[in-house]
Length: 373
Ligand code: COD
Ligand code: ZN
Ligand code: ZN
Image (cartoon, rainbow, N blue to C red; front, side):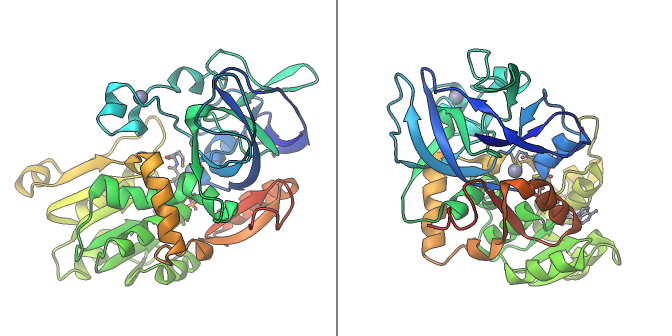
């Protein structure tokens, strides 16, 4: 099968033929219909996020089950599925408490880039190729553990379902699951990439008003308006915190979301909240980064700073619901999906992400048009 392989940081992805094994016990072979171009994979390409190599990246995807290994009971060939980059066991303390995004099931495999048995299912010329987040969807096919799949209805385009696997779940979930924003709350979103725009959509869905959005790129701010931003802040021209205070009568916002992954902008999110407000960090900062918050303000203003990973998702409940909201016209995911690329043009897709040209793009390994139905 064809796959995009990263051999070393700071080199382009190489789209080439890779051998893929049949699924083993508890595993599933999925044909990838669409894979989202997310910034997190780019962190691996630049070397900012460590990963074993060579590796097949991609962690936002959807597809169709082609074959199941022994013992698999939750899906069958022909099922449409969203892939999860954080599989959960359903039984541990975290899962039992409704926090499967914190489950440790896939922990042993993250650093090794293997399946749970310590081996990989991809090879080229006898060399092992590693798995990324247990998903590796920049390929025509993948093998994942059964727990990394959420079956979905078949009448939703798979290219839309793919976005739910990361950006939409992460952004909307940060608002509705992690922060539980109430209608009428004021919200600030710092960073209007694919995940930030999904956060804006979540704020709109939750009935927040006003919704302020800060970014450095004017085209991203324009997009943010389309997704529900009532005010935009050009962070090249203005201090985000000052502007957010000014736009809320000097008070600051009830909820501020940082969707970039920088300690500096997390501090801004905290400082932009009003008394009793909550700052939510969604972006993952470099491993040595530290967030500084004014210690007095934390106490006197009873502020909260919290992290949100994968939108605090309970995927089997949340993802079908997000797709229902899309079908009902309440989540404009068609507008988020601005461009489609064949797998061969994946490096160009990343260049477009960096230049700020697109809201969200996907690669379609089976050829453009094949994931629209
Ligand atoms: N002020 C305002 N905006 C800024 C600033 C700044 N100082 N710096 C950058 N920005 C803007 C950029 O112009 C851009 O529009 C946006 O921030 C970032 O968007 P993208 O499209 O490059 O990135 P996304 O939306 O694809 O990804 C953002 C994440 C925060 C998800 C990602 O980078 C990250 O932190 N990933 C790790 C976290 C994670 O959960 N990973 C697992 C799956 S994503
Ligand atoms: Zn992602
Ligand atoms: Zn668990």
